Image: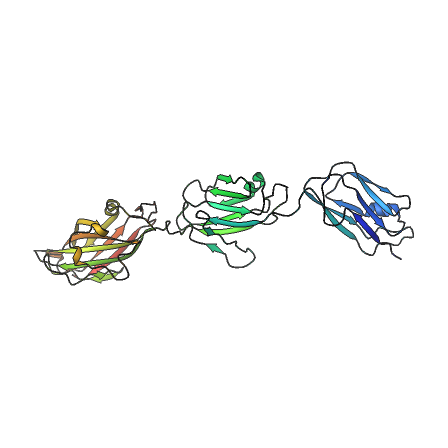
Length: 380
């Protein structure tokens, strides 16, 4: 008959508050001592020796050094262990115990941005779809809440956000919430990846165990680049009456200049509509510096530019555009121009190019980011 293991001490999954616990195995009958010694393993390894009871049924591993604190140990007795008659165990015996005060792994409770008002969703690296949380602002801090008090050195060392520099870290008094602040404003429209590494440990030394990955984008309402939503053109104002209306320009579209009311010239308006970030404005001077008009086979010169409610010249001539302006995030810039297509240019087709410099910024520091231009052909 094969021998049996009646008990293992410490009990499986027990938490031991001391660093030199009694480690013993009790068998159902007298055992062959060398086979038990050869079959006994403690992982992680520790110095010690085995002592058998007088009847060779109980074997005790006597420690000669302290076990590591806050560490999980495994006791294994291989199936080569045999009784006095040479009968071996039917199968190996494996059990574990924890040396320390607490063995539960910490957890990431939440990750948030925008003053903790926007929760970031964790990305499942096992599927084929990247989970991205949008709507974060360019100056957002990232707040990571854990289930318990954490070790600051291991947690900060295992936590990283790329790209960018996030050297400013702060903990709350309970040490269970880590706040990461960017050294400089993040890139509007940029995508960032936060990794809370499995090497993060709680104050008892228990590891998080696996990485938590969170991907987010800087697309918050205050972190949006200025966007040209529409350009409208009025070129049939006679200086006295009411114009027939504006037309919306399209890139590579065409327009026909109106007949001049004085020799060679016609007054015109170019209205540029910008969609801005929440609460942002664009300084009229900055817009004027960034806006340019170039023409071929015509001479176009701007003689005034105003914006929004400050538009006074011929303000009644261009009514609000339905579903476009006014709106809280939409801003209108009107440039009055004189077009001279007389003389040798009178019957020649050509084109005009409107452009904005990429350095144009709103009051929140959001830049256009890339050059904007529109080319419109002229039929006369």
